[in-house]
Length: 193
Image (cartoon, rainbow, N blue to C red; front, top):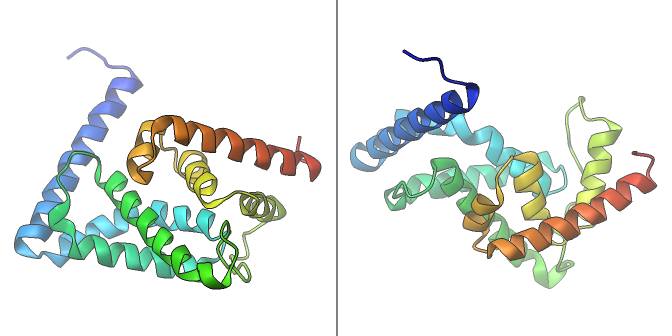
């Protein structure tokens, strides 16, 4: 068997992971197999929670609550997963909608562009850089924050961000450009090179 470089190996792993996810989704949708859903939850709870930490500016309790809502919705709507995208992309789409619904509920009593986050309850490992990043994220509007969080924290490409948010790719690029510029300006003003 010829040796394959890391790019081929990575692509093979992605295909295997996607097939495994579709198998687990099928077990949940057809047989209501909770163990299969637990496995999906364990696999993807960290990226979903990180997405919410970026959106809520580090509010761990709110992030956990929103992540739980996301997985409840995923479980109840799992029959709608068609495998046209990865399971993670589908989960991020649900998470994006959960956060949108959350902020829409806040709008009568809070700023339109930022969620009402009263404080960060990060763990003892949080440092000043993490706090400054959340402060920088706070400068962004919801769309900029979603795009930046998905790209910089979750490594999602523009095409996937477009799929998750429902925004055209050029709009995603604009939000990324403006958001990154705002964050860079803030971080430079606060002593980061």
